[in-house]
Image 1 (tube, rainbow over the protein chains, first blue to last red):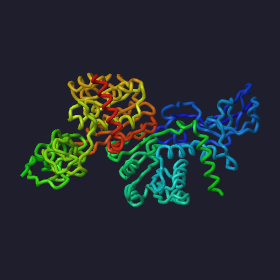
Image 2: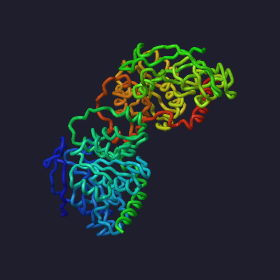
Image 3: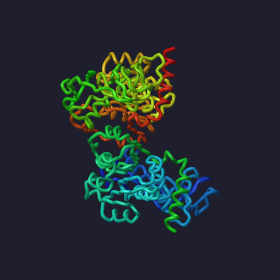
Image 4: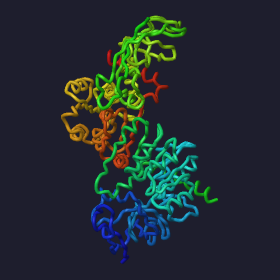
Length: 293
Length: 293
């Protein structure tokens, strides 16, 4: 009998998730049927969106959601022999029985670490690529602001903006993160816990902000709004400042500013571009190769 | 000596404008120089945007702003003989001395009243045409909500949406207005003073709203947001519920909804499409002719 370990939801999250909201359990897996494979997790991922998805779709007893990179360790499917590496949405489990339709295409990784298939070459990478380029349409010389700039998505948005010839202003929450994103090439970096957003933007973007890639929401986003240029674009990717909130934040409504500055504000979930991922993966892998030269 | 009457700003508006904020004065106009014309106003216009513009740009002593349709009554410009009808931004004045570069092109009016050059064939018409079609991109069968639906812009947006094959839900502020927009072909009409917006939308758009043309802002817009469909579009044209406000409204921030519903929210001022007005005027005049057949 094959054993698997799985993190289950023991209690629905209320505010910040706590250790006891999840429980590690051991399961017995049945034998494989024709066409099935037994896979073993190599990398699991934890992403901010999960917090929100669980709030609306989660229930006690579910396996914690998430993508994983795994290796086929037993197979009754000739297309997926033992040793094949696959990407699946199996959640936080050590071993899983899957059929071919649960296995997703791997990006072309070359000599990159397998873990990048969950990062720069995976969902966060495609989020940065499509969410920034398709919505913000950045032009050379424009000013780009990124919040959550040291995150899996934000750090890539900043680098893509630099490749596009923009001035990039990043905000992160501690000195170490700030130092790291500065080393990635961000032009101006601020610890949002130590500055007023408005003061920082007046200093770094005295003529205003063309593009804002929003990972955090809340009052932060309102402060950026006030500093947007006419015809600015705001890509709403995340609202992490609100995910653990137990009460909805009340603040000044942004619509008058959206009107008079003629802003475009668009929210997105990256799967809307799933049919174009090959294009994103190709460009990202090319940029990574250029950087690593 | 030629006399002119002019409404001047006597006091900057504070909250709802009052009679005494404006003052009617008589002026002496000088003689015409070569190239100039003396025009007499035939129609003046008053539009909601003026309230906001005056707040930021107005000063005591200014002539009240606005477009007018006028007739040349004396001329030292052979291209503009006496009797020529022109459209100018001369504000609320009876007579004005202008040069050719202050006269704007008239739309093709055919047998329409001259006043339409300030309405359906003028700025409000182009606002409805471009602001709705370019931002909302309505498709046949979609559900369109219009606030301020009995206004110069909103009433046109609803009619354009009907021409495009949409289901149109309009909100206005009294029974007479509601009756009128119903007679224009709106599918569902509500007096927003007598219903809860949310209840009305649940009834008229149980599957959600695809396009929202926003003239009013505030809590109204938040209620529509909550009823938007995935991938909905919101054209932010006016915020009239806020123009006379002396304090900024605080309410739930819309960004999480914009994100998870993947909405596009865009503010605009119609002059961004000024180079395309001929296109808008042509289509509008064609539609008017079809309706009047």
